[in-house]
Every structure is written in C-alpha cells, then in structure tokens.
Image 1 (spheres, one colour):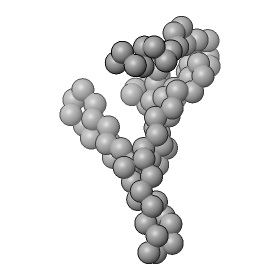
Image 2 (image 1 turned 120 degrees about the vertical axis):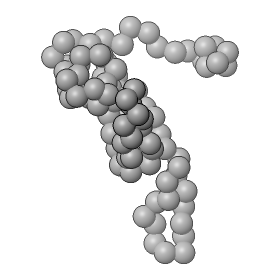
Image 3 (image 1 turned 120 degrees about the horizontal axis):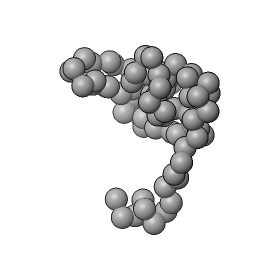
Length: 85
C-alpha cells in the first residue's frame, strides 16, 4: 500500500491496483516491490506495466511488442473462477 500525496493531516492510504490491459500488459499502479528471478529488486512508487505476451525485450517490463505481434488474451477469468481461487 502507499500513502497518497494528499494535503498534510489527511494521509489517505490507497491500495496498489493491478489491472489487465485488454490484449496488453498488466498495469501495476501504486507502490510495489518487484523481485525478478535473479533476486533483483525493483521498487515502484508509480505506475509500471509488466509483459503478458512473453515477447518484450525488456522483461519483465512491457515494451509495447504485444501490439506488433498481435497478442490477444485468450482467456478471461469469470466470477466462478474467482470464487474458487
């Protein structure tokens, strides 16, 4: 979670939000810590985009390649799947 830049005295806590971009990357908005497979840590305090298509040259970050390769999200979760998780 992150503390917003609200005026002093009114520190509102806003949750980190993860959103799927239609046929694109995952958008992570808010403070988060990303750790890659080598143990490298990327602290994020703003919005970042993570590759979902597997074709980015800057993994785990999105570089826009999904648009060039015509990535289409093949499956969408439904409410029943969410409840079973």
